[in-house]
Amino acid sequence: MDYDEYRRYDAVGLAELVARGEVSPVELLDVAIERAEQVNPKLNAIVYPMYEIARKRAAANPAGPFAGVPFLIKDLGQDYQGLPTGSGSRSLRGQVAVSHSVNVQRWLDAGLVIFGKTATPEFGAKPVTEPEVTGPTRNPWNLAHTPGGSSGGAAAAVAAGIVPVAGASDGGGSIRIPAACCGLFGLKPGRGLLSSGPRRAESFHGAATDGVISRTVRDTAAMLDVLTTRPDPGGPYLPGFPAESFAELAAREPGKLKIGFTTRSPLGTPVHEDAVAAVEQAVAVLEKLGHEVEAAEPDIDGRQLGRDFLLGWSANAAATIVDVQRSTKARPQDFELDTRLLAAAAWRVRSPEYVMAHMRWNDYTRALAAFHERYHLFLTPSLGRPPVRIGELNAPAAIRMLGKVLLGLKLAGPFSKTKAWSDQVLENLAAVPFTQLANITGRPAMSVPLYRTQPGLPLGVQFVGGLGSEPMLLALAHQLETAHPWADDRPM
Image 1 (cartoon, rainbow, N blue to C red):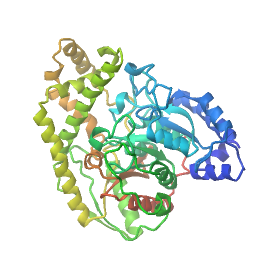
Image 2: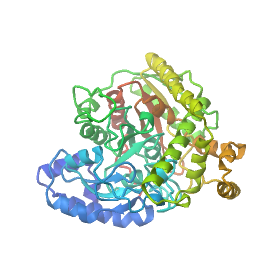
Image 3: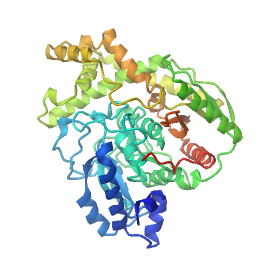
């Protein structure tokens, strides 16, 4: 099999070829590795190759629904026993995983051949993938631009045709943002549907979850079946799996849906004209398909939600630094400046303030549920602007210098409360203001690649569903994919 033939198939299609004996796992892996070696020097998507491990596994003819299909996992939270999980940080160099994570084990049980780990920003904390330890990951559609974050390496690898689908995760948009930047499909499952084990019961109060980024809807649906084969006995919830497979449900017609949409940023920040146009185009496609679409949005204070999300995000950064330093010999300078400044903000927060912020998550969830009593889905831009250039969201040099000085003087906490720092944080969040709602409320959401900017960059639109709406989202995505195909688009 040559690359052009390999690229024509999604993961389900490749698995079918292997099952019929038309191609071997070794042949597929050889093509995937050859493609990786051709494009990865330009993209920096794969930061930890696992070629020899993969070759041994492919030669052993693994069994399962995805037997022999090449696959990549994210170098954050997706532990592979005996190998480091770097999480985009200097601080974790050389720290090997003592066991597979539950989801990595399920991917292996499905017969996938894992041959590398993909790039992520430090601890997945940014909407771009530019960690200092491995350098920036680039968008295959334009190497000067970001593939998004934090699953930027996964998205770049899929868009460039190294693999048809890759492991990803989402704590504030980290599946949907890269999917939107790279012209791919990305579904964030709802809270508790997938395991976060065995190291933790859930991540970020259940706001973060694993998943995949793919070229086709059916690959995501079939991967969801793999990851929900059974409940995790160590997990905090007993998830309600549908009676039929997600793959079967995705292939069905969604019926006539009532969809509310907005192009307003919940932060009150500007929304780029291309992001607005992406939603307007999606509305036109939906109406042509027979859906009822009208302007509407949940009754939620978006700026307060943004502040509450950032408070939790900064506390999570602080806790991660503490956890890493307890288990390693990491020094403060082994963490990136932005991570340390983000964590410094958390040390200024009193416990009651944090608890009250977390309690407001319930208010947002109830308000979104009230919206979903009137509308099946909520449509927004996936991004506030087209994919930014590499380095565009970096803090200005003066702020970085001041931050370093104040960290040395142990005065970074007060600095994190200044207007200069809050303006910089808001500027970064303004690029991706729409995705955090689904994480805080624990609702499923997806980015669908329906739009291209005039320079040719992808720009997705987001649909947020109600509790347990993964089948509805997948069915609509499949309908949109049929009406507006995207899987064969090639950036390079």
